[in-house]
Length: 210
Image (cartoon, rainbow, N blue to C red; front, side, top):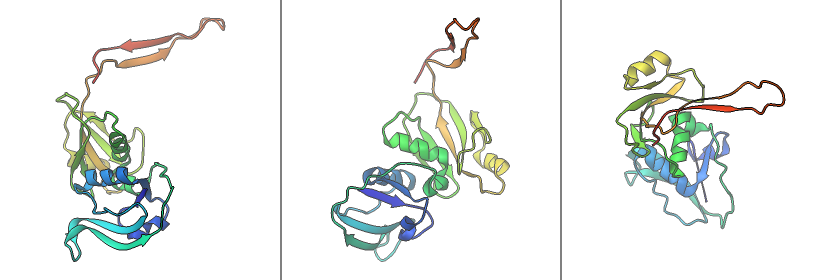
């Protein structure tokens, strides 16, 4: 079962490029993490549901979920191909989306608080045991090396205003728990003396890993 969604649109967004597509349960957990509630989509697997969700309750039932249309389409064997950037990853930030997908697949992601331009702050991840924090800018699409990632707290609002004064490049900022590493440092490949010599890998090591 698939869940397709995109921000700032009607259910017809599925006909447009860039719509996120996730396995249904994974998608519901992602939306619950970001918005703080589970969309009311308790329908049978063979039912196609057109819906919209709203941070502030709407509609006759005064709920976060509005159902537009229901249709019995029978059994479907469609599978989601998880990829981004998509419209939702741009909405919350490419870096946030990637880490959130990793967390939902139960990979070890350090706890993060997300301060977004478009939705209320939310958190995900697991405690790392460290009391240090990193401030990480999360651009709409990946731009390696351009925006700030800094160890230690920094005013996120001032940082966003400084690095993205037009408000069209950075979607959010994360305050993410630090990690005490078991192995860190640098890796280089030693220069060959002649063509017969094998390459030697040199690793500079430090201690402790989460």
